Image 1 (tube, rainbow, N blue to C red):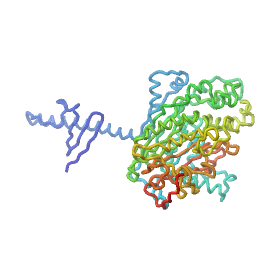
Image 2: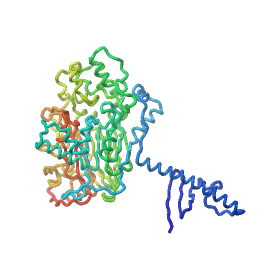
Image 3: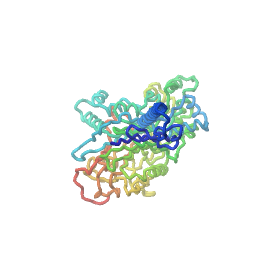
Image 4: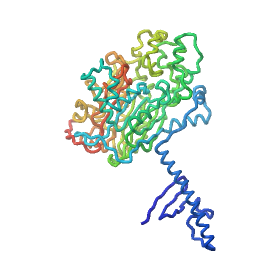
Amino acid sequence: MLHRLELRWFEYAFVIREQQIVLTSPIIQDSSFKIITKQPVKNHAEYMLNKIYKNCRARIFLFLLLIGWLGGLASARHSAPEFFSYAELTSLYEQEIVSQPLESKLNRLLTTPFVDNSHASATPLHFSHSSKLGDFMRVVQWNVERGLEYEAIEAAFKSESQLAALLNEEKFPPQSEERREALEQAAMLRQADVIILNEVDWGMKRTQYRHIAADLAEHLGMNYAFGVQFVELSPVQLSQEPNRAGAVENEVLNLVKVDPARYKGLHGIAILSRFPLENVRLVPFKYQPYDWYKSEKNGVSMLENGRRKIAEKVFLEKTLREVRRGGRATLLADIADARLPNGRVTIIATHLENRAKSANRVKQLNELLGMVKEFNHPVVVAGDMNTSTEDLTPTTFRREFKKRFGEPQYWIRKGICYALGIGLIEDFVLDGMTFWRKHADPTVRHIPLLAPNSERKFFTTLENFRFADGGAFDFRGDSSRSVDEKTKTLSNSNERGSKGFVTTYQVNRPIKFVGKYKLDWIFVKPADLKKPTARNDSYRFAPHFGQTLTRINEVVEDRISDHRPILVDLPLNEPPLDREKVTGKN
């Protein structure tokens, strides 16, 4: 019986046949190194010496080959670019134009994903199953706001007992509807096959220098890919500020100073998966409408620039800036499994620019669509699309301080809000918002002058897009396939409420609808859908029962995040649900 194994390592190619090693590479098939030879030998002794010598060299070379091959397998499980030293981070802040080696290192970091498939299973994994859908894949998306409430995030995904220990019995009393709903939503999160995370820290003081994606993946037994969008530089510069005369300023200084040995300053997007992640790519957008380095360093801060004049306290204003290197990007990863349509699905995590007009986000969307045009298998795109219709996401002073430094109680307790001149209004929404816009439904029609909606173009671009194989993103809404039996546009994939979509972002104390927005989305290319709203087409791997989980986000006092998690279920086969009759286009 002929056994054949081919190994390839750089330019060398070997074929092992019945315990013989044949060199097939012309580079090393020369007179100095022949393992299989037809040359005659002069005598038996010479023949034996040659054989021993050649066998020894062959085995050594094969050993080195196997070491290299195994190293390649290891790198497939773990891949990572190089980190910056603290001195390099200082240079990245101080020098607008950095040295060529440092620029190259930065480019590698912003284009090379960190991948860890150490939880890949040798046996096929089981998918979730329900009577309505059969076997299905559950995808969760959550902007976790840096991971500031990491323990609560982990508890929500990991175990009921861990989450129950966090619940305040006054807000979530035993047997209450609020408690039941929170635990029920946590159970939904525990069924996730794929988790897409936005705003993920690594090596930041505000999140205790955690590697948020890796820590969560380890505790959940999942594989992960992490893509750096930004290298955060403001903490590096603020750590070098001299002591101040004022007690308040010194309080802030002590808060922001970082440990150079632990600081990495990385912030980005992540994909966690029960399945191994293949062909992982990190692609920064070519079009970056906001320069996070130049603009922030020059003082164009979101909390300054005419919104709240706090420039009297120059140092304190400086703490609100986010000087960064990098920009918005897309992280792509494939999951291969014979049970999936066409054997593969591409998971795409992205985060579009918030400091940009709607038209500029459409430019970034078009770049993303160009990346996926040729895919002939299912695709899931999820993330914070910042569809606020504004060029800034609404926020509050309280939230912005927490994002920079972590726990916000210090500045309330010490009266820093008064030092900034904002008194008791720290929880009010920043002005500049348009109160009358369709805050919960950015998909509504754009009617110039009468009812303008600048975000509409984003959704028409998606709806009109076609993949090279004719496939389309699913915009359907079916009463039997959506939460609360909604039938309007996108209700199968993104939960709708009584008016518009259930919002995914809100400030802590919104004024009616002001400060609530639908920013986070999941869009799906199913297995076989040619028209976005065609109810007679297949529903295999189409989105079902898209849901926004509100209660789980409220299990800690200041909320886990300023964004709520969303999820969708994708049946591997045609679901058992009865087909609805076509009732017209949504």
